[in-house]
Image (cartoon, rainbow, N blue to C red; front, side, top):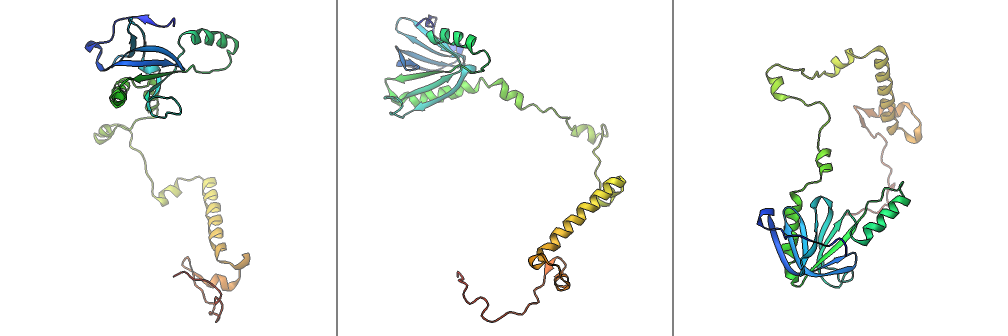
Length: 236
């Protein structure tokens, strides 16, 4: 394929973590041949016997995993999803983007690296995880930034800066405006009505129900009628 190029394999200077010979490379279901996979801190590279291959930059890799599902692919392999297009598909994607310029569809390519020795998959996956961690997503780092005003503890301990003001309930009432106090009284009245209504039969408020409600607890003054719950099943 046209995207295959000749370049020197990554070495110790680039932080080579894993070198796996006799590894078949498959791009979107099309075999690229058998070669050597190089998992380095700087990039992920694959080269065939003639010295042609490709490299993947870690920021473009959105997913990597060990696939053992033989229904998805007949051999166990290292699966790598890349946010990019390669080879003939890259040319087709350019034409599609011109036609559908309004659609923001991110290109995706699927690589499968199939080693002849499947016992090496765990070491390959571990090396990928370690190298990927060295290239965090810049968008994830930006999301951790705090845009609000920071509270400088040391400055406040030295008497510098503004100290937050806290009020007790009574002090808070004194700082309310007349409109705010009226709103608070209305809300408290609605709350008390909703609580007291829980202790009235069928929504009818009677003098007996008022007397039976003491200190927020319902006092049951109705005498127990014999046989009232004889048909009830009780779990012991």
